[in-house]
Length: 425
Image (cartoon, rainbow, N blue to C red; front, side, top):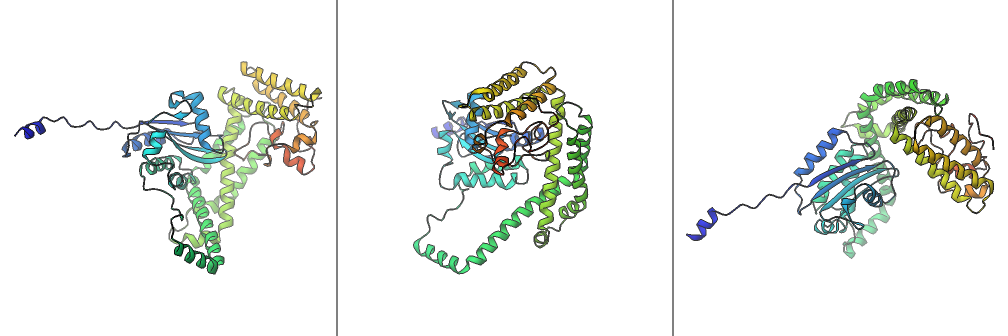
């Protein structure tokens, strides 16, 4: 009788509090609706351990190992997430980076152990779940799928380490017999995955093309400052014309029959890639022109971001001539000092910034070849349609970090492209 009475008056155990969801979207790949969805759907995930917080984050520029960027970011902006250099207990972090394009999952020691995040195939299995969606620019779905995969210890990338000797022998024998066919099949499968992702991208972007062109036209028409050379309008017109020319193909590709599209996509692989590249250039150009427009209107954040990019590049060049001293080093020091002075106010920012770029360009032309040959960057100079373009590149100066390619080909830095008015040495 007594046990029965005790059971009647027993207090039910309190339900676990849902994890706090933090979203730091520095790359602006999520809309407010996406963030709300992440918060609501994350609360529904049944984690097998008590997680206090799930952090979703994105970065425009980042390290190759994205977890290093997590630590740098949290140390400066969210120190409450760290205990020394480790994440605070109960913390799970999932993020994506755009430059270079990468993704990562990170966790506090207790969560890593409870969810076996660092176990064989676990981290790669979680990242596979994220990658499947962000390839189509569905960042919110990818991040949420990553959290769900972290909550499920069964999700992992399979490994062949546990195969028995006889299995390895059979697989190796088959591989030797079928190597040509296997390589061909792998290449076809990889191509199909690429084409399917790009076809889905074109299908999603097709309704937005006119809006993107109108948005770009509006911002181009508003440009009138010292950082906006006439050729930027020519470049924009060329990008827009290319997309307009390809729009019928984009429309055709985006409407391919789902059941039969594999064979159709193979036959249209060149057209799919061309259309995808053109639409990506349009999207990048619209974003770049909008950034330039906002800088001309003294947007504090963007002015400081581009100024810091410029200062970092000048500092890189200064490091390469540190031993030479003399006039070049002093001129670079002077440019850095005057650029840092721009931090104190945005009055006449565009004109002063443009003048510094041109002066820097003329100084770079005098650097010795040895400085260029040790440059850490080997990419071609970005243009308006590239994600890595910055205001002034190609019209006012060429960043030092892009000088290697020109030097390798024996080109003169000063002759790499026309600059409106170099500042006299």
